[in-house]
Length: 169
Ligand SMILES: [Zn+2]
Image (cartoon, rainbow, N blue to C red; front, side):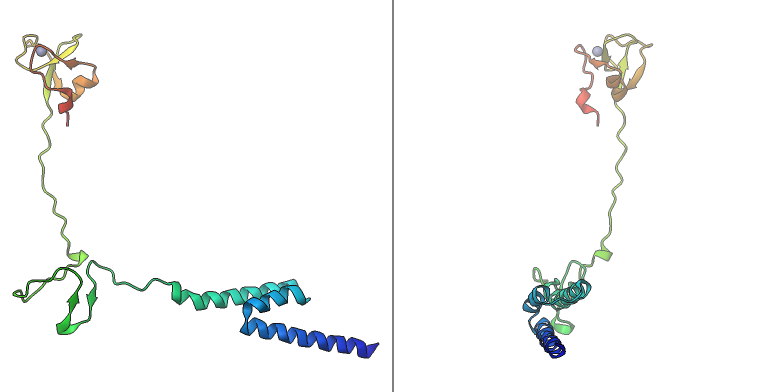
């Protein structure tokens, strides 16, 4: 009875050793055997699987990483007198060739004049906005900006050259 148990234990040990060897040398087969054939604690199986997954990731990561690139707009290949630039050929008669770097980029801001508001004339209670020389414009007619007139509901006068509502910039 005792010997039978010990033989069975020995067989189990050999089987475990085989699974461990396969886990090391052929992880997919080892994992398969470990999960199907052995009666190891679940925690051990999960731990072994995680370890093997981790090792596989470690091996594969350098292969899948994109190659490191220098930041900047120009890739410089080589150094010293034989610097090779990728791009159009630089003129040879220039001795000091400026290599473009984003840090040197200047932001040029041109001052632009603030647009003058277009002034129109609206009679109180009227329907249209007018140009200054319109017959409907009196000395007392209030002047407003075209934008204000349009927002207040006034429309372009058909009798004078009042500015088009589209001309609001
Ligand atoms: Zn008018």
